[in-house]
Every structure is written in C-alpha cells, then in structure tokens.
Image (cartoon, rainbow, N blue to C red; front, top):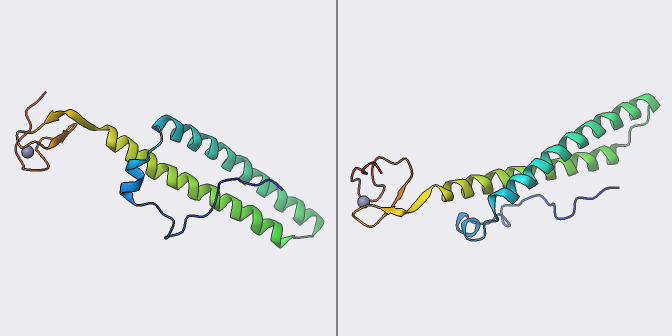
Length: 126
Ligand SMILES: [Zn+2]
C-alpha cells in the first residue's frame, strides 16, 4: 500500500501562524515544483481510484476500507496543495515589497501602490 510520507491532515492546532510562515518560507520555485508534482500525483490517484471502484463493481465485491483509505490519502494530498497555495501566495506578496523604495515617513512602499499604506502620502512614480 503506497504511503504519503510527510502528509498529514492539517489541524487547527498545528497550523502555523502567518508570522511563522513568513519567517520560514521555502523558495517559491521549490513550492511551485512540489505543487506541480502533487497535482500530477492527484490526477493519477483519482484515475486509479475510479479504476479500483469499477473493478470492485465488476466483481461485486466492495472493499469499503480500501476506498476510505484511498480517499483519505487524496484528501491529505489536497490539503497539502491548499497549504502550498497559501505559502506561494505569501512568498509572492512578500516578493512584491520593494525595500529600496520608501515613503518620506519611512514606510516601505509596495509595488504598484499609489499611496503610502502608512501615512497616505501619494507615491511618486518611479
Ligand atoms: Zn508614508
């Protein structure tokens, strides 16, 4: 039976805070690669699951535990994909901060911002 090492359903207690996520963010390229691989794996598993069910139907022999186990693995995989989406969004938004550009008040200015988020001064076009 294939296992998914490292996969487990995220619970409310184990969910990292937004601050912790920002502090320990892996490179966005690695996150995207893992996401792509998981999406491919998800497609394969969905197809296998359909084949498994059809085979059970043919033999008129439904093994409930097996289906539950396979579905559980798929849901864990989807949870990880959703987690990756959150991490990628955090990494991308962090990358949008231009630390070289500061408002007169000293706050960092976000790319594309027309006004300073800190004091409301209009941002001069760069
Ligand atoms: Zn400002």
